[in-house]
Image 1: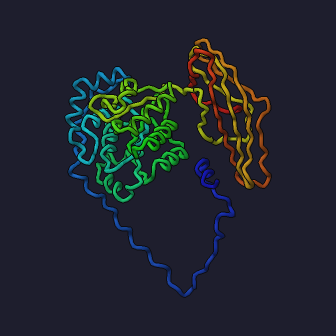
Image 2: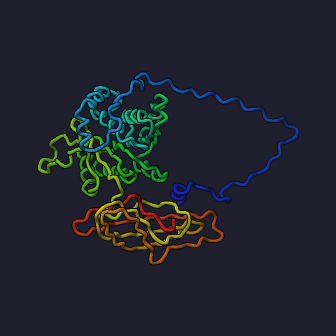
Image 3: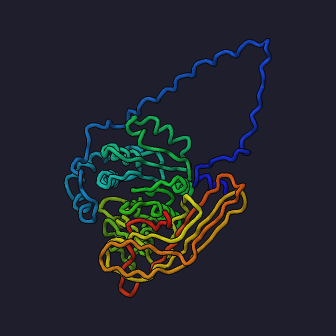
Length: 400
């Protein structure tokens, strides 16, 4: 519980957690302590000579290109893909991806322009270098990358990168579960994720689901080695459960259950990727979903506010709202379950829903720095033929 609270609220300490300060008078006969010697300068390792210079830039034709299935297919069939494939044919030498996969990875980051990217499976940093090169050319963005077996190997590799790239990456020596939980507790929202960890179906599906949970609308998840059954079937299962998502390609749509191991099973020919894109909005479907706890200023919730996008849909939005108070004693929790009748005619709409009974806590007078969180769970029961509910943002508690 203490770990959860510190992750949510920054881990402030109680006064009685601090050791009492002791005042020690030095003996008057002793001379004053000598000045400590100056710290030894920290030497920066030389740049790895195998790393190519950042200039000249590549892929300039990608500037301003929107990421759609059609534009991506056209791009990968044109001269820009030939240019990138030639550049990444045997580079970086430590990468296990094929040259055309590295070209597609670079092109996706250049065109999508993520503010924050993540990678599961650093290995020797080849994929991370492709991503950070694209971020550097974009002039914005940052990469979080993780490898539970790279605690000694990976920092040394990144230390020998050019400073321009080194500043764009943070390495985490964690397994994917701890990695995604760490990002979640730090409230890091992602725009682009490369999943290249364990390729067993169950673990690949977990990585994909956790990546999607932290992804902003319109974000992209790349499943590497989709030619293998685990990543491919994980992507197929995920798309079936999340119909608002789409594949940037046709591998999953053209999958033949009568020939389960036939074909390249890649979204773009010549690559090893299944490329999935989130909808450009928050899509609420039939499977109940929570986005976890978020701090609130006061232990009071009187209602919910929803920002619906322009759409034509109708149905019942089921919700479970949870308010929690953390103080000196056991956590307090209040729940409200209800249904909101929604009927949208094509215009954007703000839905303000009042709870029949507000949720309120009174912190103990002796509580030191009490904290409150709010969690919302949603499930959309659409009328026959109606699409999923599209929201501009996640529901927020009232009052704000």
